[in-house]
Length: 382
Length: 99
Image (cartoon, rainbow over all chains, first blue to last red):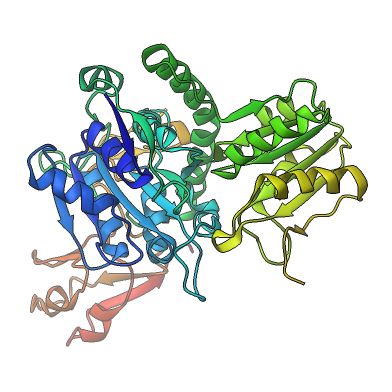
């Protein structure tokens, strides 16, 4: 079944199709309509789930942690300051190895107060142990939520996953989304079967005090699960293609094969970059676009394989790590260490500033004529 | 490999592979021992003890059982010394751990 959906609807319908058992959410700003839609779906009886309305985002994730530990498939959604308020429990969920899926609508952090697109909120959660994926369109939002549960709940992985979509450009923009047949979705994503759970017949304590003789190993196991996740993400993407016809990897190359200039980016800017590449190709400039879907685990092998033939590489970040540069740029540059290819870090679109085809063409022009720099600001009013 | 000791419920975790993915105990708090950092070991002197059970009442853990004489469970005693301080008959002494 195809429907015209905003990103918020695509996320809510994705969680519904995944047959989540528990949704816990804080309903007020900076919340989006994702959980409002889900509350209606649950109230109307279309999804047999418990909807827990809580008093803060901190409590929302805490409720998900408890429910997931008891064996439920859980879901929550938030944005910006809401994600920041969850921070303590974001660590808890990952270290507790609870495969929660959280949709984060990427909004700028205040002040100044903003509800527009900016990925600083999720990139600030980089080191928590969560897997992070960034979506380019609403179909990808729906599909990614289904795949996220399958990847996260894999018994070799057991890590929570953050599904990110840009505010307004996806959350409030309508696009055609194919929602497939529920029976086919059920065969792709069977019910969650936890390996270890809260059980009165077999009591355990979860998240107990861990001494130096064990803590180090728990961290090692999370790191190894991230390494294994690279393969599981690729396998799940291929299985998804076989069933539903759309393939998703950790990265996606667009017209990169013979490209001299490659623009690396993520989220909705990746879509604009593809259009910009088409226009520049018409003018004879050999340029390609390289989309990074997964920020954690970071697809080092795919990045090296996809970029090492380029003459120059530009990375566009819709966030900035103050004092150094964009996170996708610094990670990509580290991955390309030893390849001796000039790399340009572009900071663009912060706080929802539009990133146009002309802006992206301008970046390639900059790469053609200027020396590389780590932080090139696009469109600062001077 | 995880070793099972003669006490069937105790499992010793030697390698990362023995450990569950998350810090969940392999059973209830009965098997999740919590006294590894104790630096002072309280010792009840049976001759001086009058069985008043003041130590049992004050132990915050509780790691003292009201037996005759009271016994200290060293798998859970943190060595806080409250029992030593509260004993009305100076019947609890202490020694340093790891001598």
